[in-house]
Amino acid sequence: KAGVTQTPRYLIKTRGQQVTLSCSPISGHRSVSWYQQTPGQGLQFLFEYFSETQRNKGNFPGRFSGRQFSNSRSEMNVSTLELGDSALYLCASSQISPETQYFGPGTRLLVL
Amino acid sequence: AQKVTQAQTEISVVEKEDVTLDCVYETRDTTYYLFWYKQPPSGELVFLIRRNSFDEQNEISGRYSWNFQKSTSSFNFTITASQVVDSAVYFCALTLYNQGGKLIFGQGTELSVKP
Image 1 (cartoon, chains in turn cyan, green):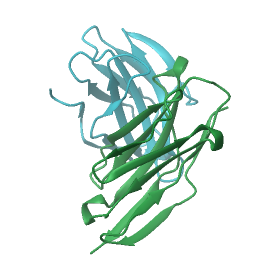
Image 2: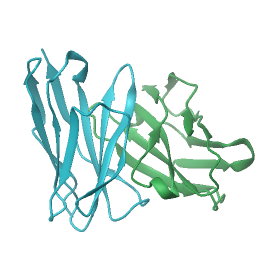
Image 3: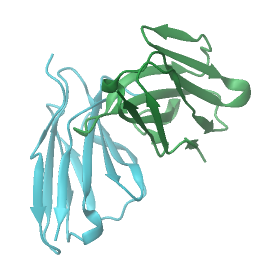
Image 4: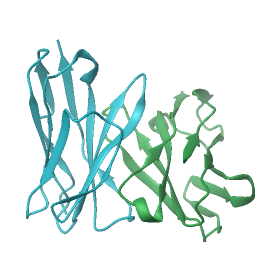
């Protein structure tokens, strides 16, 4: 089976812009979770989607949003980018929760 | 609230040494799951092992072994005869049964194995 894929792999944006990141889960996996990784805060949970519904949400401002499509693919959006949003954004999928999550390669976002 | 603590920030060993990575977790829930992930320089988190709170059986898989002790809330990971390819950041993580899609990670332990 193909693993979790994320696009794009690298992204450079400027403050105030918005960005959309995409995640395709492993075939058959219905749960998709997103995480932000920074040197200062480590790995932090953003949100989880299951069957197109947000099931869990972390402590991030409303500028961070996501959605899931009927084929389980997921997107996350960050509006009005700030310098502190520079991070590695990781997507993970699992068949159901709380099964093991398998991670994609991540999207490295740099906000200038 | 749940918390995962990896007190060792960095560990450096010489190839073929054994190394143990420590993990201590906090939760009041009785049903939870613990994980170890490895993050090589490429950035992708690689799943290593998962343990359920009701399964304290320890396991050995090749050069890897795990020691889960509910009495001390610890879930330690040992690499026997370390190799240079083991160099990576290792993360311990916790999730609750009713929050399965939310992993709570420790800060990670950076392991450097020198030849």
